[in-house]
Image (tube, rainbow, N blue to C red; front, side, top):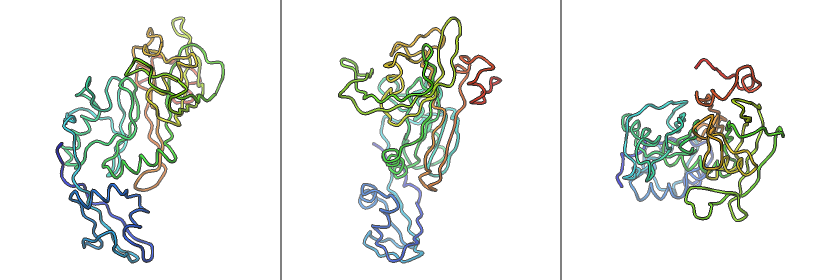
Length: 316
């Protein structure tokens, strides 16, 4: 492990009457783990510029500044230069569009060329003192929106939000055959398939998983019938959409792992089209969206209901 420089200061302004610093920080979402790190790993808590302990009694209009300690950066994450398609960036979050074929984080099989490698390279150029905290991860062959927290405190806030209220994550997928129902919910537990370290399946002893499915259009191309669906995730299990859709008899086009046909596209036809959540610093509701990439656009005939609903631009 190596450590980066100290994180930037996080400012808090007190509006409450007579409150312990410890209680104030708890109200602001600072975790016990973060406070322990500040105390023992090189951070500081300042009140009006003077270093204080969490037992300090705050007065109205006091200014609290937290200096988080240096973050540890794993030896497996190397900085790399590359192109990032950035949807938004501020001191708290970085939201990008990930292309299909790129891993989100390094793995044994893909130690380089991942989104995290490129983001870390950007951090070094920007002199941003943190490791890469991925909040919403996508499979290698899934394209679309990925949210990254800019430090571990923001990561904690966003992870807590996901556990308590969830993010609104919307995906577009193209699946085998025509789905006759216009909308339905798949609520089936998912677990690892016996004998495989990659493949998942619906199984009674798996983890709870829920996917809402809405049909947006039905197509026929080269004698292949398929359906465009919008999916909303309420849980985030590995391969959740791919497993659920395959289980109900409609695997994703291009998804050979779960039985999808590969004559129209060579990767799973799945795109994270948007995510919505409360911004961890401003508490405002925000939404970030991504347009369909060219390989998925090629699956959509012009003059369709899908084109009208999503205002698809075929010129790009």
